Length: 127
Image 1 (cartoon, one colour):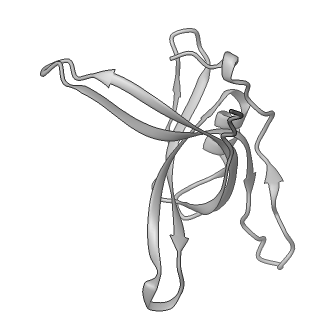
Image 2 (cartoon, rainbow, N blue to C red; image 1 turned 60 degrees about the vertical axis):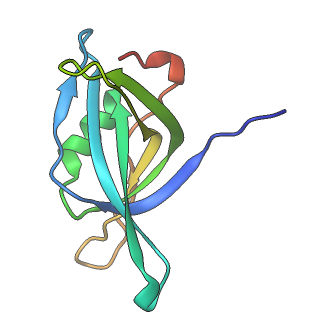
């Protein structure tokens, strides 16, 4: 049976960004975006964790801030780990960003939408 794992989201960054580096020096930027579902009184926000790597991570960290609108094109990945103090197994779903576009508009009304960097390939990522 074929499989397909693709996510496209437009939302707003929920807090200021922080750039970190892996042991081998690869830039990593993890952040949450709020995406609204529904309309009117039935509107609700969904908060989704996104992780970007390499030049995309650096560009997001440099050009984005809390509240900025962003488009993320990526895929879902399950992260698994074990708590150090209790040994309890934990997991969560995150979106790995392949491409990102900044969606904010300039004050003069022209579109400032621009790509954040090159797509990341799954075999380029190591935790």
